Amino acid sequence: MSQPGSQLDGSNEEYVTLANQTYDSLTTVPIPVIGIPAGTMTKFKGLLDTVNSSWAIVKHKTTSTSTQLTTFEISREALTKFLRTFVKQWLYDNDAATDDIIKATGFRVHSTTRIHHDGQPAETPVCGVKPISGHGLQFSVRTEEGNSGKPNAVSVVRIRYFIGEDAPADPSEFAHFQDFTKRPYLLMLNASDAGKTITIGICYVSSTGAIEGNYCVVIITKIP
Image (cartoon, rainbow, N blue to C red; front, side, top):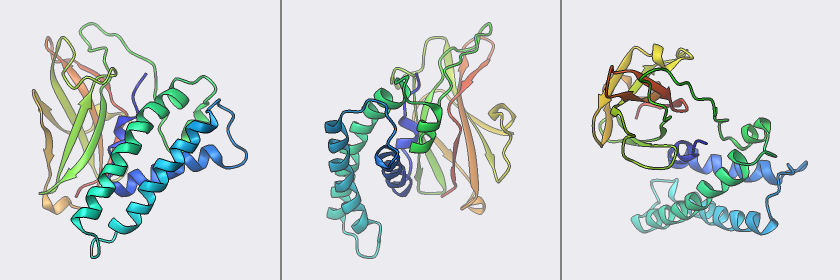
């Protein structure tokens, strides 16, 4: 089963919105009955309250200090560590968590279907993205088991992307792509495209025959 890493690696604003939506959807009447212990939700709320209090300060760049930002980053890291296990256990690996419940939390429903063609990598990468200076994006790419190295018989990590609205549903139809044989996975974009929507699909490419594997959950963000 895929990991929830990609969505938890978003911008601070996206992250805080997702974390609060997840908590609210699981505690608002009618509360989804999916077996989460009360103590687990209490821990969730404690970590979330700390993030929210810190974010209320650092989101205003004119008044935020480096110390306050460090405090926020520490609180985000603690909540993220909790959520990676929480989401996998109580949403993705929980038969009681329906697709509608998962969608309500803000997390994407992950397909468990694998297509096995001759020479096609079986692994589906789990990906995250963060903006970097110079109108760029940096990607984290891991296997379904959480390993950062490429799987066996894979030589390339391919990042396909579409700039603008109305991207094709199939990432293989994105006209632009860049191949990487090693980290870091950095996609540098034109300053003239800053602020535009970019839709991204990432896959492993086989060592023999250059065959694309399954794409990660599509990432939609803005070019910084």
